[in-house]
Image (cartoon, rainbow, N blue to C red; front, side, top):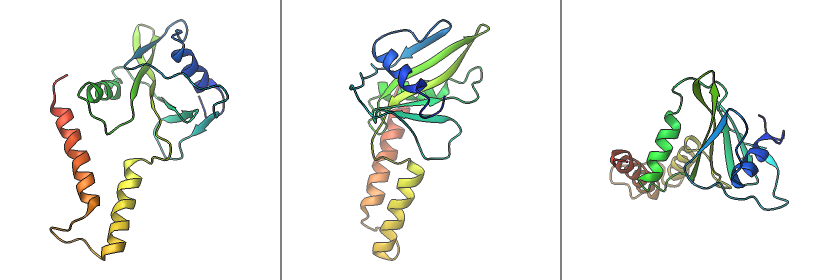
Length: 167
C-alpha cells in the first residue's frame, strides 16, 4: 500500500461500514472507525522517515501498513489498547489492527489510528520546542520556569501512570 493508490481509503471506508476486509483478513477493533465524509481529501503520506508506510486518509485516519510483518508482531497493538483502556489522552484514538492469517500464523498487516491535522511526531515537536525555548532564554538553568519542560514532564508522567495501570 502506498499513499494515493486507494487501498488505505478503501480499507477505512470498509471498516467504518463494518464490512470484513476479505477472506483470511480480520479487523480487530479497539474503537469504532469513523465514517469519512463524502468528497473527503484523498490519501496523503506522512513525511517522516519511518520503518513502516503510514497513509493519512481524509485528514481523519492513519493506516500504518507494516512493511515486514513478523509472528508475535502485535506489541504495538497491545500497547495502544492498553493506553486507551488506561484513559491516556496523549495519543490519537486507536481504532484497531488489521491481521492476516498466513498459513496458521496471525500477522499484523496494519494499525489504524486517528489523525491529528497539523501534529508532528515527538522527535520533531519536542526538539523544536526546546530550541525555541533556548532561543528565547539563551540557556536553561535549574529551576527555569519553562512551559516546555512542564508540558513535556506532564505528558511523560501521564504516560508512565498509564503504563503502570493494569488493564
